[in-house]
Length: 95
Image (cartoon, rainbow, N blue to C red; front, side, top):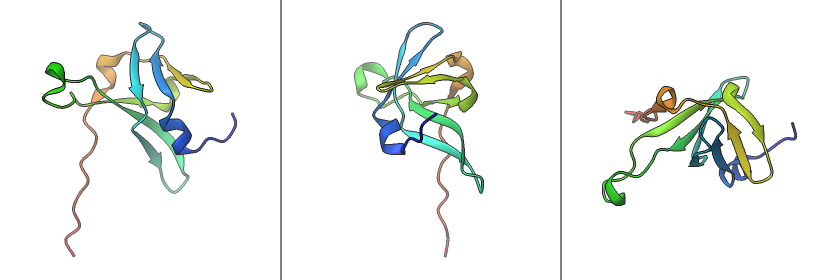
């Protein structure tokens, strides 16, 4: 696989192969440090009631579920009920 920057990944649409559903665009990556390997990608969940109440969590898609990364889309094989999660909250440092 050719090297890819995060800015390029953000511009690719994520498609689920299980049902052909468009999930959205990559919003975050989960890395394993210090190796720097990608563990998972995060995709925003669907809008709640007509978009007035924000989004309904996020999808955490493990890197092992990604089937192919193309020029303009990422194909994943994921069961969405297993992938639904809330992104971890960032902890505030008390210095």
